[in-house]
Image 1: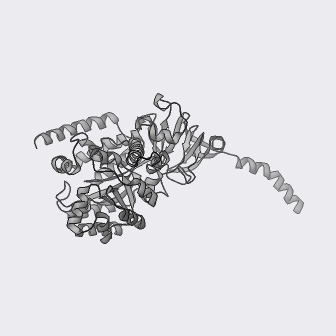
Image 2: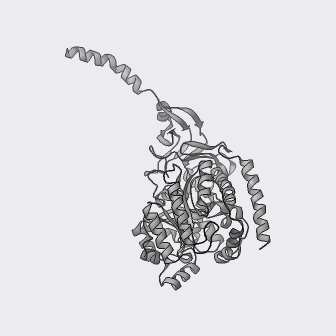
Image 3: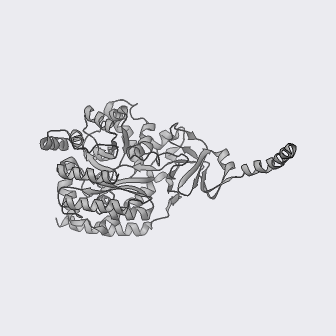
Length: 464
């Protein structure tokens, strides 16, 4: 009997081995390119391949083992290209693309109070927000952003437009002291924020958030109510922090404390908090943010253009803070190209410290991907190419003259690549753009509607 069992095992063994060698099935296979994983080991696979099943990365590895072990309904040859995690824009105001170039070369407070706030009062509406978000989504898809953080008005319209375009969003309903286009009081804005949190609570692409504008534009009661609402829904809390010297001065006059110290005193700092800008933090505030697990969004282009200052990013990184990159709104940048944000972040801090080793290419790249995910508390889901993570990836063409020759893909991505080099954008396993053709938006229609809305903005501003 024992001998018969051995014989049966021997007879079945070839069939079992053959079955084990059968390729696994995926929906999409990216193969032949350089895969920059941004995983813990910072592996670069040259050449490599990525298998996607549903909305998840099923496997990543060297091209030989991947092509032998996987078959897919759709195969994209990425030879001559780099496959990398989708870019994460950790701060912006998507509809403000419609104010791109409306008022330039001004300091922040003058820019806001004389131009932007009056323009918003006359032009912001659900239709404007939808049109502006579609334009922003088109720009982001075409330049490789797969997740964006937003704080604005009528945020439910931004969420619907983002979902329609296929983008992932961490989106905050703005709460601000003065009458806003969608809410006459902070209390009304908080009620809108509550409805927004409830409406999009279980959305696969949208993470709803609460967005108290800043310490200097809200009273203590409204800030505390924002904190409590975010806590009740375990939602992110998005806030501008220490963007300008004027903000620091105003908060000290109002509270007797520096901005981060004040927010700490009322319980707003924690791992759900994402602080945008953080330009004028001192060493004590950096240490405070690190202890509380606060994420930071660094916006180098906007800060330079508005002459707000230079954020102490090297000190933040040295302290271990999770620092992501943002473009801010296109009204103060004036684009949503995260490759530009990477390059400027790397260059700005070199010249500011007079040390070319500060914020090297790898650090700038990480801020746009895995460190941005850390700042959002989403590093377990996005920010790197690893099996089990969400399938948010982009493919970048490396064949144009300005990127030839290619020695170091990480360096090239930061110092030579432009958003226009992105060939393919994938979010949640869905191809949003392939070979520069956007699949989820009608580009001509989006541009036509944006130009029509811009004419309304121009007329409203002219009548000011």
